[in-house]
Length: 286
Image (cartoon, rainbow, N blue to C red; front, side):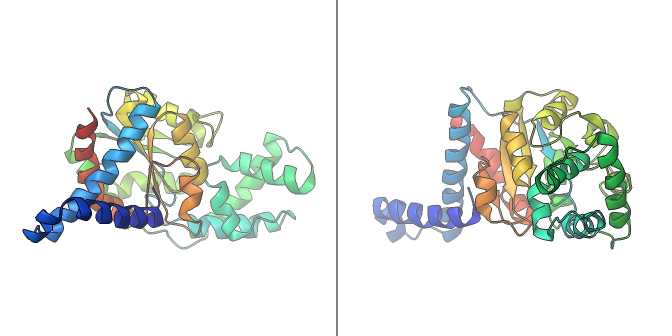
């Protein structure tokens, strides 16, 4: 559910609930209690829809699969600029905002796709790989991307709850992958990471998330995907996993919702704040 959809849903639910519960309002129900009720109502609805649409008996998260760029790091502006400036050297045009739409794909596949569309030509993997190295060089020269606000706190909540943490990224930026383990020390491990080097098909193919499930040793209904990119959301949904969108970029919320995200939050901090309610809401559909 998008941020805009959330407020529409919230207003509708408040109106209906108030009409049915005037006595509770007269009794002075605390505003916080009322708001928590609304959140549970929304989360239960989306979890129930997921369970029923997949023919499941339960939703029992044991692992959370995180994308990296735009989720754990505020790195997408650097990627967008790097794509635009590096590909211009080859005569390809990737507008900065357009880079967000391609996010999640393996870099080589992004280049081959854009070349196919703009040149009408099929590049070999070797040709695309050489072009990607130029993009990687541009990225390494960008300012250091900061950790996404709320991401580490959310991970600590997840770990405290006994769930595994898996990082599933289409990135092949070795410098950022190495930094990830240091910045999220005790939370992210190489054994529970899936990168562009681990898969044949990148997002939106479900292979990266299926590989993430395999590494975590869990089934689709035992996991949650956290994604900021439309193609990443599509991959998570195709893998049969309950997928949460976090809109940290310039694309509209609808771009994530249209790909099947069950919930869409405006930031990692907002998702962190709601995490406990989401986890508790699953018990209502057992």
